[in-house]
Length: 187
View (cartoon, rainbow, N blue to C red):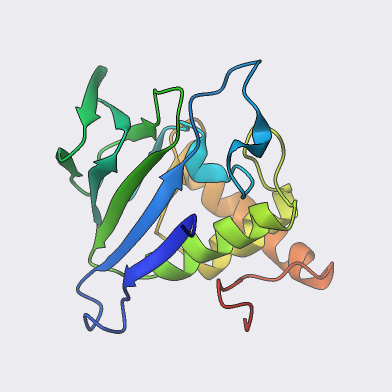
């Protein structure tokens, strides 16, 4: 089973939504065998609080479980359960179980969620993220500049993130960092 599959593309829906099916790594544990899955952890496997300012996000558990943290509350979802997070709501998502979880993920409207999701996954598979799920700052700036207003971290003021992206993205592009990577390896 592929770790990330675009089930319904933004192109197919005229931009109304994009739907993915993906596998989330089990919760982090010191004794976890990394070989359990045939792909590397990617940013979505790390419960970093963030906001999608212009998109609703819908998660559905197909197999396993999922934790959702928003507004200071945590909710565990089991197979067949789903949650929709409205645009602008800070949240964290993670797999709380000892085994992988398979989930559906949708963004409404699609905007550039497909491009950003594919880019983050491919960069991780290329070994371009740290053990904590972070991109090199110049790569992050180039990627964020190519996908403006899709995603913001809550730990850093949004205005500061915009300034940093504006300053670092041109440097990152000159250093050879690419803004977009595609699952089909053509981009």
